[in-house]
Amino acid sequence: MEEVQNLFREGVMSHLDRLQALSQNLAQKQDEKRQQETDLKQKRDLIVRLQKERGELRSQIQLQKETIHSLSARQEGSEPQVQSTQSALQELRLEEMKNIMEALWFTGISGKLKDDAVCFCISTAFEGTYLDSYYIQVNNLKNPQVFRHSIPAFIPLSDLAKEHLPADLKKLLHVLYERLNGYAGRKFQADHMEKKSPAYVAGSLQRNSLYTVLSFTYNVTIEGQTVNFTAKFLYGDLTDTLPTEVTVTCSDADAWAQEMISSHVSLFSGTALHRALDSLAT
Image (tube, rainbow, N blue to C red):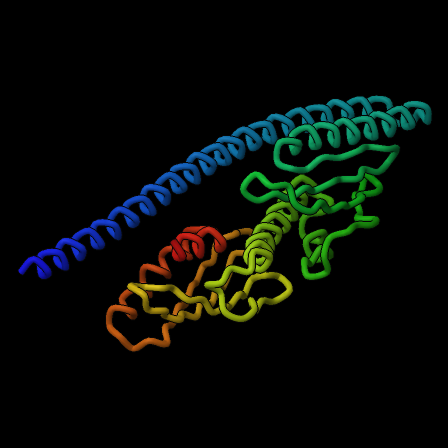
């Protein structure tokens, strides 16, 4: 009888330990979710502010253009005045470039203006870690054209430039930043997982050059039994660092193992790859 009671007590304690571990994991996930919501709100506030600044900048530029056009019309025929008007337009364009660079400074994009060209630096980051930087030089500010750059070949810079230049240089830079930052974040997660070489990941990580398709096999130990899972991630949004579609399969046919698949899918869909795996291993 005493032996039965001891076994029962140990079973209860073991169950309580698992519940406590699950509670701690849940609390950690809730903290991470709250932090993500805070970061998202800050980014939204920044976007609203930048949009407001863009509207004010466009209004100022339009007013200056109208003023210059009016002066040019009244003084037409005077060669010195024509040169003066052209000079004023050039100054206006330079001032516009300065305003664009100031507005983009807080988004990870900086620039250096020289003569009739400007070189932009697009810096990427993920979860507070600075990653790679990319450069693009735009010449002929009156009719902007990409002169040289270090943008990866898998990003269609020529098509994006045709779409946004010369009408909206700021939009082009914003699109490039979002795509490069999304790529850098996905690559960071995959590289971080491979460098750690955790014992619970079996084999090597399979991925394409854009890191929009990832697949790997991992194992989870449950009550002393090792269960193998295979995961495949698809990133439909090139600007995002979280997958839009997650598929998890399990080699074990037991019902309880199959039931865990949905929880794994949910975890991978809302948590960075390396953090999700660490959470499953604990």
